[in-house]
Amino acid sequence: MFVRVIPNNKGDKTKSFCALVESKRVNGVPKHVVLINFGLVDNESVPYLKAAFAKKKPRLVYDDEDS
Image (cartoon, one colour):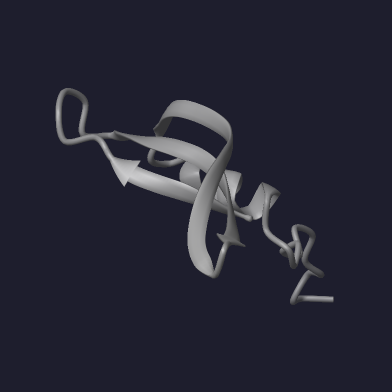
């Protein structure tokens, strides 16, 4: 599964169309199946959306470097 991001070419350029997509093979041919359509999402929110559905979850809490 991955988050497909398509830039908005019409209207507001600060937003993109996003969807959660699963890749599978049907009779040996790769197909993409849309599981969830998120619609228009702010470009600033796209990395957070990708991180939420990533296989390897990113580390969100970091140790202080001063300690």
